[in-house]
Image 1 (cartoon, rainbow, N blue to C red):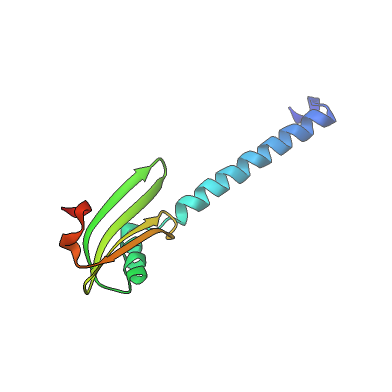
Image 2 (image 1 turned 135 degrees about the vertical axis):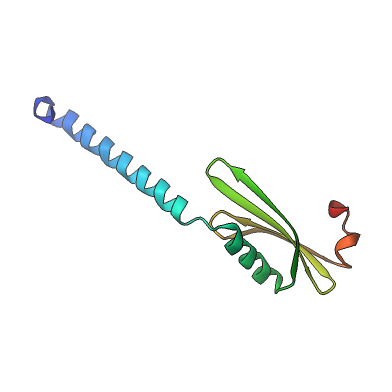
Amino acid sequence: MMKHLSGKARTLVIAGGAVVVVLVAVLIGSLVMQVDVAKAREIALAAAGGGEVVGQEFEQEGLWNEYSFDIMNGDTWYEIEVNAFGSVTNLESSRGGYGNYGHWD
């Protein structure tokens, strides 16, 4: 089949094939690098400096997961979001205890 294509067309077919291979490799790599809920919990606890997980949520958007943890550490509560790759994307904190935060009432 490739023998019947002109040089320019052959180059385009090869380049297109290479792009597809790279995109598939990136997709597979990103899926393999995702953290599970246990690892996300560990990351959130480290971001809060320890404490107790008193609530957690899991959201899936397409292929990507996002985890949200409510953590109490002493008299400080934390709401921490961890993305599919283990990065903390949001961290909120307040003193005064878990029950004083309206979001969780």
